[in-house]
Image 1 (cartoon, rainbow, N blue to C red):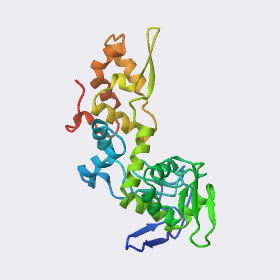
Image 2 (image 1 turned 90 degrees about the vertical axis):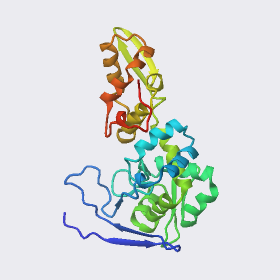
Image 3 (image 1 turned 90 degrees about the horizontal axis):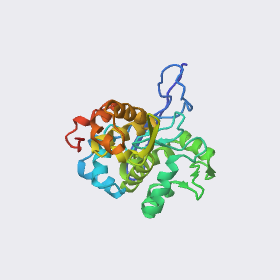
Image 4 (image 1 turned 30 degrees about the vertical axis):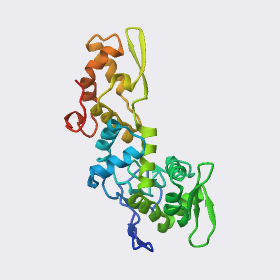
Length: 285
């Protein structure tokens, strides 16, 4: 429909300035559109950050050096830690993996806030509480209406963050300036999307084999491939189907035998990037 997009400029007392335009232009019949006055900002891409800075963030989030190399390779394909979307079915989506508030304010974004709040309460107070944003003990978003001072919870808080761009900017500022908030994003990303412990089942001539991804996939390139799929699709599928097909073609009877064909499995699971060609990652034999 014909609309008049509005531009909003938010300036913090330290001079940080954020500019938004609402009514993001989506294709006709876009199924996920929810808020006409929502905004979309990709933020500063992770590939623009230095390797040392990214390594420090992933280490602080509890990733081993090997996990960090694989996750970092995927993260450079994503938006920035300060990415923000408030127009679609995520309602308020923040960060490099777009953790969401959900309509009721109890989505994965609350896990990120709770993680920072528990690990670094001083940084959390500076990043969020002083601006009127919090997560309560039930894991629900709380926001203070900057105009009235009213304390809003859940869906009302979500709606206020979308409507009042000052609150939107609080999240983007934290993603751009706060290492504590960035570290919390990586911790939650690892919890939800790291594929090593994902379970799978294959059936070989009446024999049912169950295992975890780490039983078969050992290389950083392989983990990066599955991490990429899980971040973008929410699942490692069709990992089990591909593995079963490869095992049948080589007459493998055990998962130990299947490990020697890891490269073949990963080649069939390539998603956005062929990590088998990445010299910074360990490769399957």
